Amino acid sequence: MDAHSDFTTDVAIIGAGPVGLFSVFEVGMLGFRSTVVDVLDTAGGQCAALYPEKPIYDIPGYPSVMAMELIDRLLEQAAPFKPVYRLGHPVLRMSAIRARADGTNDGWRLEIAGGAALEARAVIIAGGTGAFGPVRLPLPGVEAFEGKSVFYLVRRKGDLAGKRVVIAGGGDSAVDWALALAGIAAKVWVVHRRDKFRAAPESVRKMHELAASGAIEMVIPYALSGLEGQGGHLSAVKVATLDGEEKALDADVVLAFFGLVNNLGPIAEWGITLDQMKHIVVNPATCATNLHGVFAVGDIATYPGKLKLILSGFAEAAQAAHAIHPLLNPDKALHFEYSTSKGVPGAK
View 1 (cartoon, rainbow, N blue to C red):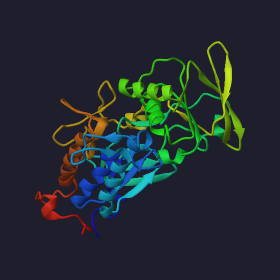
View 2: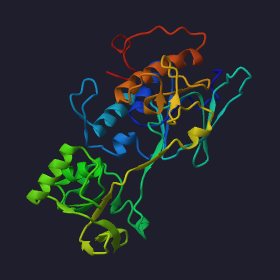
View 3: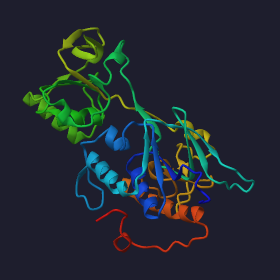
View 4: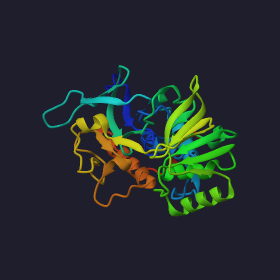
């Protein structure tokens, strides 16, 4: 029997964003099984949750690629290695298995929300900026509408075709979706408490051009004050000024973009060395943390000269995978091979 047959997986990857998904490919190319855990109920991280239909321009080989298309391609690239995905369940605790005085151990036990546990021989933390969630609408009874007609993220703009949409917020997400839905939704209102927006100036200019042409309607200075409807389905959205002037917008959907609440969550309690900005400090050559067998890649990792780019995270995933190999196979030399000569399991 294999000495490690009692482990659930070889490598646990915390975070299913683009860098976490590419980590599946990199450890898979070295012959290791992986399980991916994420607090979100879908793969893709912020690419899927915040800007699935926005183009990304700095991915090598793609002059332009939609964020969700990139995630789909990464999932396809990881598929030959048959990763296990445990989505919608954050990791609550992580503890060393048979820890020794010299700081080494035989792996890690991850306790996942819902009562499940995962044992892994190594861990890659690819948690982006940490666990994040949207700032919810502070309106009475909003819970009944959330997920049915009140949304904090949009998967695909086609889902809103022909809908009457109220967009609330003054940042990039609000402005970008106003631009994206003009001409697709039956009606678009942009509700903001002031006439200044915290978004890219060119995007704001385009939004005002659309408003001037009648393609969208600006509702300023107003804030959402109430929701009307039954069974979770909206019939109208109430908006009000600071002076109490109120009116109703006959709407089907509210998109609320008031930002995200970000924090490391339980990761901050695992004994990992963090910097003042709560990023995980790693060795830039291996992406190893101060904990034996635990690595960090992507935006959550920091070292001198770090660039917060997806492409940097891809390289870090490769570094971490190659650093894991001698830990899991101490008696087996790693002969580096390019994928063009090695091939990919299951690939034609």
